[in-house]
Image (tube, rainbow, N blue to C red; front, side, top):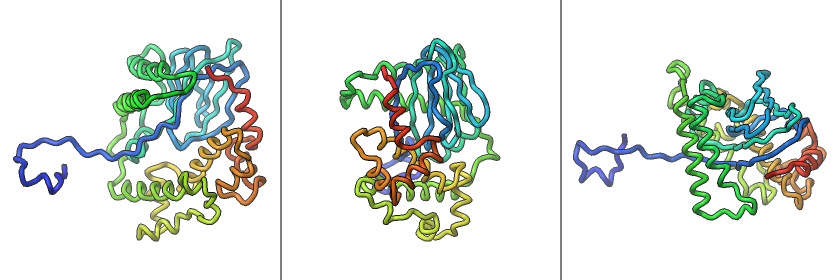
Length: 303
């Protein structure tokens, strides 16, 4: 534990400290939804963790070709970058609760993605703790979405509770751990990418003028591009280019959900030279065009 210089002069040797914490924790949102048989989400992957609780009915989820048939009370954690398909295949339909979140701590992300438990079946002790925490989130959902500051603190407190439960299931072995130097550079690369792909740059439509290149980031960090690629892949499990693509996809989905925002404007905000170029890329990501994706949003019924 490193003690700040200004405190050292009056501390006794037996002083005990909690560690300083500087995490970037983000909740991308959470929702409940009721869907009929035949509803499906095309194959996709997120930059964040997704955790879902089946409230009623059954859901089929395919993670990297592994099939999970989830029933009432089951909980599934989908790690960042995991390709997955979600669908309702039962006549009675499906109700579920889903949340996307991220903790920008490379070691937590690496350990949870590689070694953490992801399926928590109904009836198990682990499921019970998670389910209780997630239901507290469900009970905070308001129809008019008029949330007070106190509500937001309760929502974030729920996220910390869930992170604490999940962290207890990390079983990464020592031999899979990476060195602090590797984590340090991977974190700096991720922060650099996110700082260049921020809301201000997007709103001002500056991305076309500001290409984000791993070579430029490596130069600033005084490391080689090859080493930059290596450390990032080792910690985050994907390449910097893929990481940026996932940031773009997430932002594209958020923008498309705004019905008054023209798709051509969205393409420009995200740095594409034309709507056609953006549409081709979005279809590669999701299997549908931005227009088709927007139309599917209109058919979703929330409760």
